[in-house]
Image (cartoon, rainbow, N blue to C red; front, side):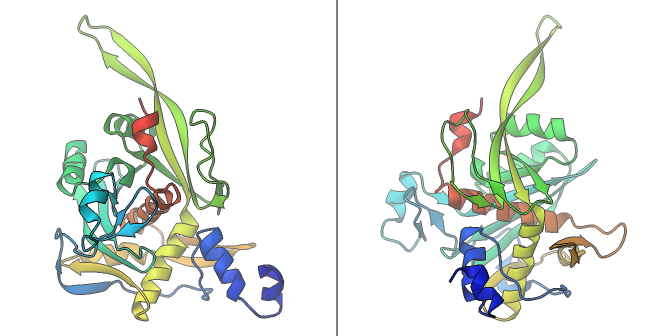
Length: 306
């Protein structure tokens, strides 16, 4: 009996497995979302390293610093599960950095979040926390062409959230092979952009360059964020934050509610003119994590970006 047939008979166990493992979507039994809070961990402060951080090996295994193979795997290219996302505004940037354990679905820690005002500040923060290129994404919904150019120069992802639930993970002919033969909530694609450079003689040279755009389901990612905050409240997971996290972080994460529109549940603002920047940051981090895990850490950025 398949998952849908079982569900009709009242058995949702197989449907949960299908939803979580095949589509990488979280399961929630709640139709209407209530306001919740992220757990603050005593002794962990903003900007502090997190000892439980996992590292993704080339074979897809996740280890910690306690592993006997840690040094060998890091030298072999194991990637730390620490991610940075940037929400671009007219005159500033909201950012968040989150690290995940060897069980990324069940345990993670907000390392730092805040507001920056220049691109130099953004990439200095990336360097400070040793964020791998493949683990950083910048929202391209605003100042789009500028974001494309900056992410190409700094070899990280442009990102775009969408209403649709899933994407086919196929990178196209430029990559030469499918990245993942299924549908999931995040998928990269190569796009071409034009940038202009000033020449020494005063002229302008136009270059056609390749950028990587990571598209993802905004609704599914917000489901995941709330789902894990809910599980944390029930002591079934740890989607945590450090001491000193600004109050607006919680306000942003509670800025939207989950309602039904037609056949699907979607996220909408609780009221007009309410900020949700750190919520967007967390959804982008989820998409970056999922993308990394689905590719086993194979870094397309170095190979395909010019």
